[in-house]
Length: 441
Image 1 (cartoon, helix red, strand yellow):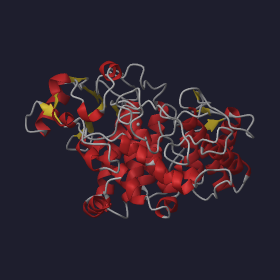
Image 2 (cartoon, helix red, strand yellow; image 1 turned 90 degrees about the vertical axis):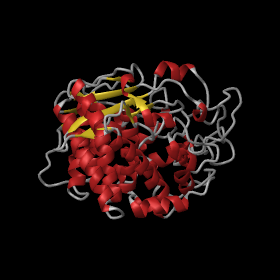
Image 3 (cartoon, one colour; image 1 turned 135 degrees about the horizontal axis):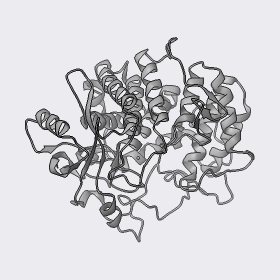
Image 4 (tube, helix red, strand yellow; image 1 turned 45 degrees about the vertical axis):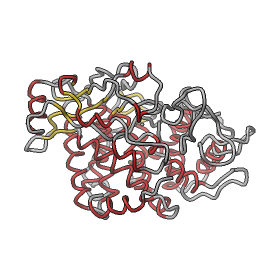
């Protein structure tokens, strides 16, 4: 691991892609006798996945020795290669950059095992991490990984704010929701450090909106502002300014454009993203507490607003469950009933490991655990807490295969991971992808 502590301390004093909100699941438990390592170890290890996916010049200085600067040419992305910009939005970007025909979209984080950058999943990941810190700050301080988390949050938010352009009244003019060519990226298996391929940019504005990306970015920036409110109030306020602007944009233009995205992350709806952004901004604007004036969206047995059917677990595409869990944690008692309904709707037999969905089942299982732990914490009931613990123990090594599904912890974990940076030769696993949670048993 590289020595980054000195650099992190400077950032904190001067201005200090799939991924769930459930690292909070590691707080307050004692490890099972069958588990191969502690929950604290798992929490610390999970953050290294983001270092593996870091993009831009700062990747050279993160914790992993096998990562280096990559895609630095995103810093001069050609505006002639930009999609979705109106003539007014294009002019605004040029004016903000001294008339240049290029725009800086460097930094941020790659998605999954690829080298594309999506603002919707980056926003979802950031909000999930910041939420876990908001709920369980001691889990990070007591395991010594608070600085690492804050570094990741800041890198994410710096990128999202850099690719968002505001007018003089702090309204969104445009923002970048994707960088890269999906076809070329998937058709080429190389390490990110040596890539020089075409990287088009895709933008949203009033004539070409993307409410799902705007909503997830707003939630990310608002929740991160709470993480920094006592450590760096100036930076927290900047995050909140952009969060409010993106929240307003999502509410004003509640539809989405998927140029470039195709089938990668086309969202099933935007209403949940708009509500998610509104809730996090309300809490952040009120210093971390839901204001008395806030009127939550109604829900009854998985149906929001009377016609928004959910029946799915918290994920980048469906954040309604997160909306309910966050409201319950903020004192809205009726949403506890909703968590119970959604847990029972998703899972009938909780006594053994249960997969949810097909692709990336571990993350969905962990999102269910977040429901269970939130309900246990604020209801006082231990039943669902025990169910969640048994699920996490299975994923962390207490299983018939005697292997962990969190890479880097324990003695045995799956090999041949689909990740270009860790596995640049494709046929032979070159590096350990520390912190990655594979699909599951």
